[in-house]
Image (cartoon, rainbow, N blue to C red):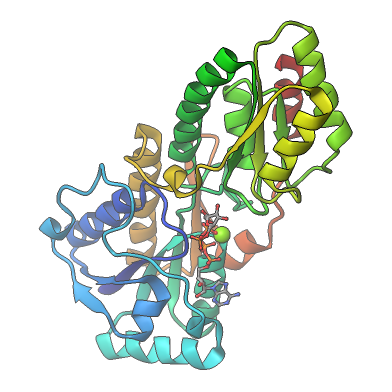
Length: 319
Ligand SMILES: Nc1ncnc2c1ncn2[C@@H]1O[C@H](COP(=O)(O)OP(=O)(O)O)[C@@H](O)[C@H]1O
Ligand SMILES: O=P(O)(O)OC[C@H]1O[C@](O)(COP(=O)(O)O)[C@@H](O)[C@@H]1O
Ligand SMILES: [Mg+2]
């Protein structure tokens, strides 16, 4: 394959730039013409496509966000929209795409694949919600950002003997909450994958108080049914200890990517380009036990994410 396009789509994630850099430079080094598509599928439909050179991706390895910018596109969800997307790609002579994004972007990519475009999916999302890969690009950075916030919150919570609820991102997948809760020593971790029980939350907070803990940290994923402010009110009422809710929001989606995310991004995007070069069928690139892997795109999307009950148990034991 000679001429390829790269786009970033859905929620941005730290490390997307590292993936763009790797895709562009690997492609150029293999003699390909590489085009950058702006604003995800939305920009594709508007024909916002530019040739990229080696230096177009200089000085971005360490930057969060995405230089290609990103979007959520309603138009692309329609068949008419996607057919228009294929026409645009044909107009530019682009035969294959690297789609850097999350589950939604991959679904969009598989619809494009059904229309004859080869799509290599590179998992870029802080959510870590793609079943076929151990980790997605951006997840490690987001977890570390949350950990640094938990550490600050712990200081002030101890000083005031308070309970702090930290609401982290993740509507359907609680991995950011699970990993940051375990590594941050949370007393309670609330995940969308588990049933929410206010009595058990209050029992754990009370148990901590009675054992002499100066504070309690509750890490709650945004997808858990109760609002953090409501939860703070109820916990305060039932435990007699002041409670505060903190919702860091987009802070956890920005920032310089960790070394691990830069490595994942560089390796996965390089693999995506090699697969396009070899004229392989559409694939989802991932990592399994520290190796870079590639599944058939449809197969990857059909996999169900396995909940890490082992990690949850360790967190509960150590709290
Ligand atoms: N089932 C689908 N069919 C076609 N396009 C889709 C589908 N799901 C998502 N997309 C496209 O991918 C974009 C990004 O998906 P979204 O779920 O918002 O983010 P992410 O890729 O980060 O999970 C959507 O705005 C839409 O344009
Ligand atoms: O950017 P928006 O539209 O507010 O979306 C917020 C959502 O995006 C995320 O940050 C990332 O999710 P996606 O990778 O699916 O886009 C979620 O954790 C969060 O629920
Ligand atoms: Mg998603």
